[in-house]
Image (cartoon, rainbow, N blue to C red; front, top):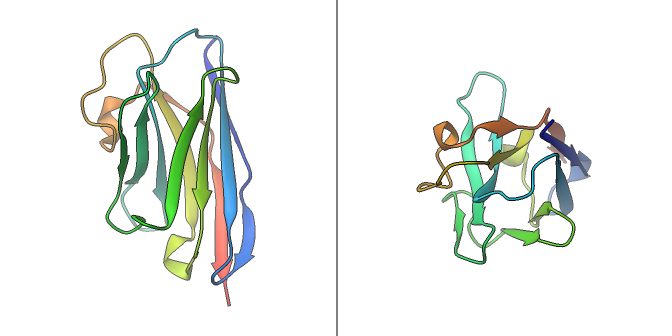
Amino acid sequence: QTQLAESGGGSVQIGGSLRLSCVASGYSASYCMGWFRQAPGKEREGVAGIYTSGGGTYYGDSVKGRFTISYSNAKNTVYLQMNSLNPEDSAMYYCAAVFGRLCSEPLIPEQYNYWGQGTQVTVSS
């Protein structure tokens, strides 16, 4: 059974950093993986996406220059390094993956067919 398990969320002060991790199990290869977030009352937003074969990385405009997505083939794990966090970054963060089909737009949630349960990130003063 394919599963995605996120970790690394928590509470941090303005300007702080967090690193999210998401381990994929039960499937041998994904085409792309991504991080999305959703704050109360808002739509799910594409934060970052990556082609796991070594292709490009993609970022939402609000996180460019602050967040970095990376992927470890050996560990089947995607990471999201988040720096210079601000209160607008507070949300539930979800890991997602595309297995078994092509991925053409890594920041579009409808591309993804597997999702993790989410990990909460809270940024406060």
